Length: 230
Image (tube, rainbow, N blue to C red; front, side, top):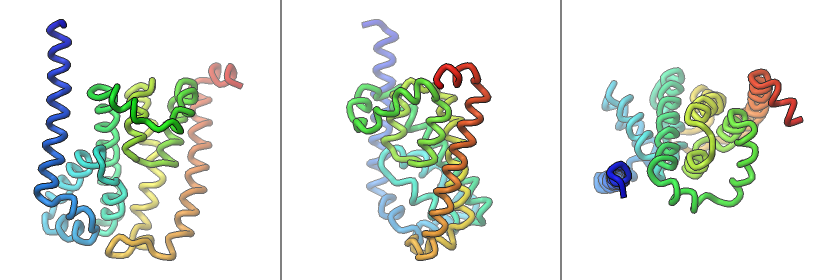
């Protein structure tokens, strides 16, 4: 085994150990219990003032890729801050968490993650190879930010920057909707209100429209490739 290979293996083990220590620390300090109640989360972050922004982003970035639902953060944000601030923080946190999840799957635990990707995701392999940007946009629009999707994209052949920009475009409509209409969709405890269903219907329609626009954009970027796939 070469020195480079040994160094890489040590680095990977170090990252895995850091992740496990972070999750153990979050458990010991009851962070998961704190996150399970959006109202309590909102109260704590408000008390922190401007440091609440940083705490929100760091907690989102570190915990979401390894099990904590991202919906906790994006539902809590508009209950705490004005929608513009909520949208900005939700976008930063979601993108950071996506990059961490993607990078962990690609550079640290690729074989382990690949063996645990559900078979239903494999149907997107061909689409990712032929229309990577468009497919990432659509997957993020429809599925948002589940950990398994971070992992699937990480072990796929999608380039890092294609994943980054495709995810960014795909996240804009749902996060904008939730940030702007969050107070109408959820009560102070984070429970969905009856009026949320028409909003979710509008979000679904907007997502389909956005996916169509992404397809048009991709065809304009690669007109020859689009013709060959027709």
